[in-house]
Amino acid sequence: MSQAKKKILFHLPTLIDPRNYNGRQGRILGVLKYFRERKEFFEVHGVGGNEFGLPQWSSEQRKEILNFIDNVFIYEGERNLFDFVYTRSQSFYYQKLLRQQLPVDSDYLAPPGYVEFVRNLVVQNKYNFIWINVLDYAHLAAKSKLGVHSIIDLHDITSNFRLVRKNISYSKGLKFDYESNLDWEIKLINKFDRVIIDAQDERTILSSHLPSEKLCLVPTLIEGLSYESNIVPYQGREFKYDLLFVGSNNQPNKEGLTFFLNSVFPEIVRRKPDTLLIIAGQIIQDIQVDTSFKENVNCLGYVPDLAEIYFKSRVAICPLITGAGTKFKLVEAMAYAMPIVATKISASALSLIDGVNAFVTDDPKVYAQQILSLLNEPELAQKISQEVAITFKNEHSSSAVYSKLDEILGISLSQSECNAGNLKL
Figure 1 (cartoon, rainbow, N blue to C red):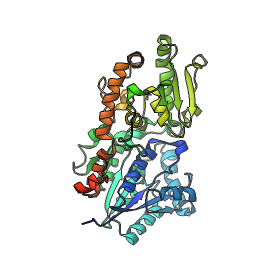
Figure 2: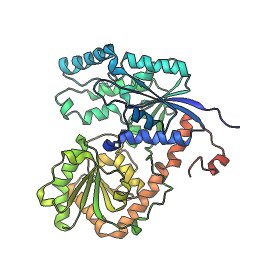
Figure 3: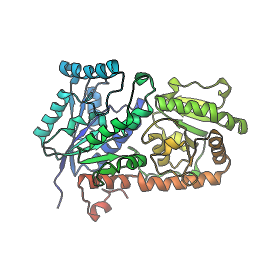
């Protein structure tokens, strides 16, 4: 007997823009792919907002999102003067008068008009689930008493994210009390029926504060890439580049790549002068490469399809020295079974173990040596590639992630449905 379709209101906190791709978009796309693959079980509606100062949902973008879900509703918040005054008064009070960051439990991005808009959708459409992405929008559902099962996907622990970014331009000089904000964050997410995280280190932090049945670790799924695709074995690839860094234009990427170019790369080039580093993504807009490396660094910028770049690069690097949460670039590298050299903070959210399925270090000299070992020893690189492929299959493949989402949303697949391909094993 077929199961009745469950109705889900899925919150869209960001536009999906392939030219400015980031981890949040990638994670959301992974869930949208799941909904599309499970369309016989769900009727999914999206909800987003056109708000002051944020990118707007165009008709083209609304049409694009309908490739994944059944309907989309957009709150025209930029037309609500009350919401504008309401949110700006918060920013003025905290940032201008108190000289501190907005509290993490602020409803700055979920003002009363937006909350009422979502509430009306829930009443009218009688959803079984409401799924909120990112703590900044928690108030869209946290106050709901409408009998809908509420889910929040944190993406990052916001208190951690704020702490590591307190010195970037828009928050520099503003006070931030980590302990009190973490306490407020936990109280807010406790109002949800399920709390989804995507990082091992986040589970360590939250497990002592939330009931075990409420906290769910769901690794990031790579949309558009199936583990079952014909991934060319590492030893069978035709390499064109040595090192690959992929990143959007943000402060952690800038600081990490600068650290690598200044403290690690010179030693690599000194010992292996023909080393070629490829930099892909919008990070090239805000990074300076020393002229002495003009033959060693190729800044590609935006690349429509990264698959070819991944397959033609020997080693993926993630030398970030600040940041929080899962680094999407690492999950992508794992998907392509690439040997990885990362810093501890980059790898902390994932099951990457130094010397087993990756190399992990903060020491510039050791970082350089590990890269050189992978470049000079094909057998070692192949071994690491095989190990990271196993890790990806066990934790980030469609079958691994889908089974976790099935459990959260109460989907039960029969063996015949699995055999028919509804569950990609």
